[in-house]
Length: 249
Image 1 (cartoon, helix red, strand yellow):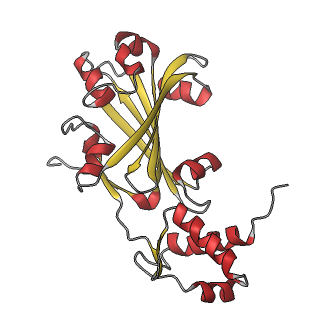
Image 2 (tube, helix red, strand yellow):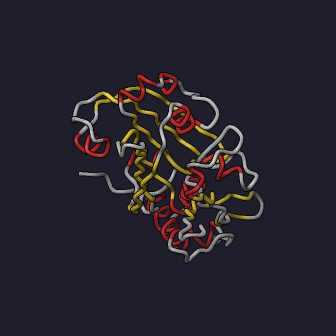
Image 3 (cartoon, rainbow, N blue to C red):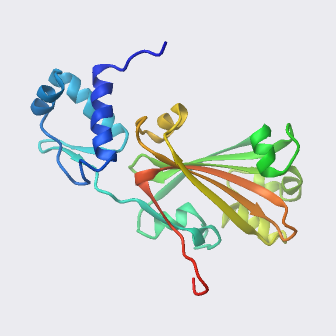
C-alpha cells in the first residue's frame, strides 16, 4: 500500500490546490506560519517544511522578513509559429522565452531507444525499430523548469543527417537541418491536459495536483511521411500557448 502523506506534504497539497485553482491569486501573501499552523493543526516547523516544498515547486516565493508570496504569473508565451520561425540561432522554446527578455536554458541528452507500440504508431514504423531520442528539460534561469520535450527521429533521416546525434545540432536546431537537407515540413499538434506522472513531478518540481499540458507534434515531409515526433509536457501555469487562425494569420 502507498504510504500516507506526511503532515507537511498534506499542507503542501492543500495550499498548492488553492493556488492552482486560483483561490490564492498570483502576488497574494499567504497567512503567517503561526496562522497556518493553527489552521492545519500543525507545529510551525512542519508548516515551514510545507512552505519550502511549495517554493521548490515554483508556486511561491519566500521573502525573508516579509513572508511567503504566491509567485506572480509570468508564463512563457509561446506562439505556434515559433516552431518554424528562426531568430538568431534559435527556434521554438528559446524564441518564445527570449521574446520577453528572459534567459532560457535547455538540458539535452541524446541516445537510441526501441519504439514501443505507442511510439511506433506515431512514427509509422514497426514496433522495435531503433530510433534516435533527443530528451530536453527547458526553463528560465533561476526558475523551475517549464517543460520537458522529447523528440524521436526515424532512422533513415538520422543516417542522412548524422549531426542529429549531437547535443548541439547547430543554429535553428533539427528543423533547420531537415530543411537544409531538402525536407519541406508540415506540422500537426494535439494538445491534452492531465495530472503529472511521478517522474514529471520530480523533473518539473510540481505537486501531484498541478495540471500539465501534453503536446504530441508530428513533422511530415513533402511526401506526407512522418519524419519526427515530439512529445512535450508543459507545466500549465508556466506556459501560455497562442494559436492564430484565418486567412490573414
